[in-house]
Image (cartoon, rainbow, N blue to C red; front, side, top):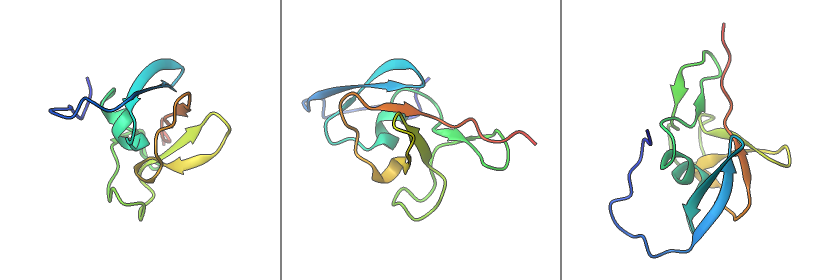
Length: 96
């Protein structure tokens, strides 16, 4: 189940992307954080445990929203805009 729900504003262009190998869509102007959390219930697992995380500061100052792109880069989901065709992988976190 998605953590975020769109209540209004559905008139932006739809952008297809891949999330953990599965097709997904977001809207033009979405950050990766928004695009991911309108599809699933967490952004990634914690670096200290596998507990689900959904971002913390939402402005690029913390380290809580890292995701991996298809080209191998790790980016902050809250500060990176969604692009059509992006491949986004959530990190499961570390199990201790």
